[in-house]
Structures are given as C-alpha cells and as structure tokens.
Length: 402
Image 1 (cartoon, rainbow, N blue to C red):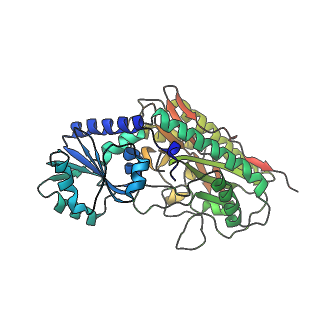
Image 2 (tube, rainbow, N blue to C red):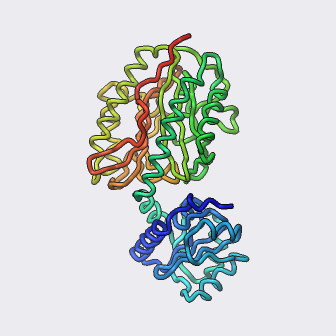
Image 3 (cartoon, helix red, strand yellow):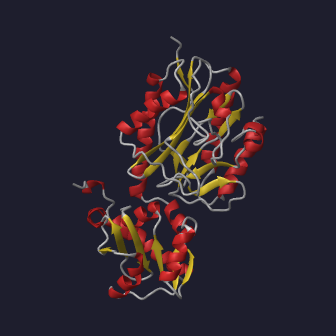
C-alpha cells in the first residue's frame, strides 16, 4: 500500500536527529518537542499527526495520534508509538527510560498559543523555550540527499516553463493559462502543496501575471501580487485577458517529494517593448553579478545591499523589487521543504552564508501599468558562488505572432 522507495533513508534521519541533539546541547536544553509539519517531516520522514520527542541523549520517540500504521511505514525511527492523548506524553517518556525535561525546546515561531498553554500544563515545572532558530539554521544547509531532490524539482520547473509557449494564446485569461500550466505541473508529480512558515502566508503554485497585472501589489512578502480571482485571495492570476507585446510572468514553485524549486520566467506574444526588454537584460546581468559575489562567509544582507546598489546604478532603483512604497527589501530567500527558509537576502540580515544552502535569487523590476520583468532561479551555494539548479534559458521567451 505504501511505496517505501519514496521514504527518506534511515541514515539521513539519523544524521538530522544527531545534529539537532548537538544544537540542544549548545542551547542547554534537555529535549525538543517537534509538531510543525515541515520540521516533523524533516526529522521523522512522516507528517502523520504526531509529537516527536527528541531527548538530548538517546533515541527519539515518535508519538502518533493518527495514523500509526502509516507513520510506521513511512518513518525509519525505531520508536514509533501510539498516543491516546497528549496528556500521556510524560507517562510514555518515563516508560521508555527517559528523564522528564527541565528545559524543553518548542517551535515557538509557529506554535499556536493554545497548544503552548496545553504543553505548559503537560510539562508543568519545565522551562519552555524556543528551539526554532536552531532548527531553521540546521535545515538551511542541505544534505546531498536533499540537493538531489531539489535538482529534480528544478528539472520539473524547466519542463513546466517549456510547456508555456504551447499553451499560451492571445485573448485567453490569466486564470485559464494558469490552470493549463498547473495541470502540466500536476501531471509531472507536483505535490499540490507549497508550504510556507510565515504566519498568514499562503501560496497556490505561484504567480502567473500578464501585463499590468504584474504591477498590482498584494499583502504577500513578494515583489509581485496580482489581482487574483477575488479579494478573498488577493493575489495571483485573475480574469484579465492576455495581449500581445506585454510581459507574461510565470513565477511558479515546483514541489517534488517535499522539496521546492522556485522559478520565474518572462514570456511574450511577439516582441517586448524596448524599455522592458532592456530592463529584463539588466536583471540578467545583475543575477550574474550576485552569483559571483554571494560566496560562503558573506553576510546575507550584504547581498541585498549589493543588488540594490547595482540596480540604482543602472537607473532602476525606483522599480527594484516593487514600486514606490510597496517595494520589498530582499532579493532572495532560502528554499527547501518550505518557500521561506533561511537565509533571507534582505536588508540588515547578518546571517553568514554557508556552502550547501539553497537560495532562490529573484532580481525583478516592477513597472506599474506595464508589468514585471526579471528572473528567479533556485541555486545551490558552492565555495565558488551560486550554481543554478535549473537549465531553462533566462532570456525572454518569445512566441511569434500567428
């Protein structure tokens, strides 16, 4: 019933648990309790309804409310146990010879308040503290296994982009083209869920925006927004019809076996206006410059500062990563199991880049009333700089007028 060839290898999970236990020692914690889906999958290889108790020493306990049989089939952990109620967690910990924690790490960046208070009652007397920073820093640096999955996700992103010229036609609505492109992605195995950590953030595949739609801002932490199909969504494709000689942004995430490739290309029916074509070329040049300077050891915020400086020198400062007051102050972000992982290439960020990080670099220009140009590729940070994982050409993809 369950395809075990898709499971995360036992050695991979053991290495992740070991690294987390080292982080617990550095923080002076006795244990961590993991609940959030992406973190739970990272450390246990399953997202069944469960609590993962990781002691600073010894084997972890995966305590499953639902579905135990599936959790045991998916997770390589040796202690995958039934849990009748969260109130039984202390009893289960003791029965397996583990001490109750005096200092317990929780994912306080995402844990709902009601769960926090419930756990405070269950672990009465323990100090509850935040372990999310350590988890996110660990997850920022990818293993060889993770990089291979992300390479496959990027290959799928390339295939999705290659399908667009055959699907787009003048007069169709953005939402119609989006549906056709998304069907191609789904056919290739897109998991249909794009996970984000930031509270209140949502995304469905990504943004497909034509012409002026590319200049419509939204609440999302993104340079683009789009009108969407209603104020209930307020982002993404809408019912505007696609016209010739305007930029068509296809900024889509491909999520393959949990792992993400964030990928944007500009398409056009006919030729782009010279102003926008030149602006796009400027962003491709900026991408090359960033790829060369973003090496291990550099502060992530310095990459944004460099990018902004280069955009201003080229005369595009007012349009870089948004327009006017709606401009965002980053030029890239980490990706992995979630779309918004460390590092963030944003203003003031001092996190030091490390080899093995995977970063979506997205220098874009927004022209209100005209659209968006620019690029986004998912990269692996190597000692030499950023290596793009995809291969689809970065230039504007033109479809001749028929």
